[in-house]
Length: 187
Image 1: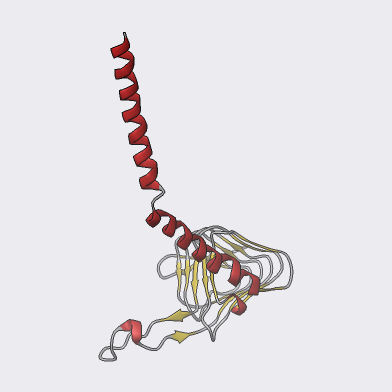
Image 2: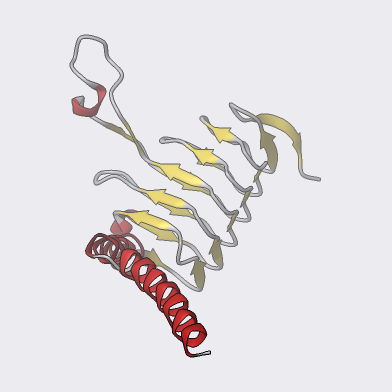
């Protein structure tokens, strides 16, 4: 009987040792560095830039939205930007939202592009181009759409989910596709 209880304690000790090794592996220095790095990235992307955004009224931006150069982002009244969006304004260009704008999850807006010239060196080192993005009033941009530099989306427009908008969207137009084209007009 005494041998059984010693064997039982030895087996339990092995299980505890395995659990201890797993926990030590999870909470390693590398893991803690990764957590700290992720937290710092979150603070930089979501907190610091958010404080610099210009707004004229109420707005809501999900905490998982990535923002660059918030001082170049202008929000109208009642703007709603949902999760996992990217609002990346360059240093010399703006993203401007009108009033009553809805932005679905995963929407990306970039006011800059890399150079594409051959024989001018790698694209990452070529000069960037910049152009403003302007979103009118009463606009809905569907989930996972991409709005490229220089685009103007006029009042009352709707952008279908998954669209890539590369040129101006007329007033009250419903656009969709890659690249986005007018499907019909709101009535």
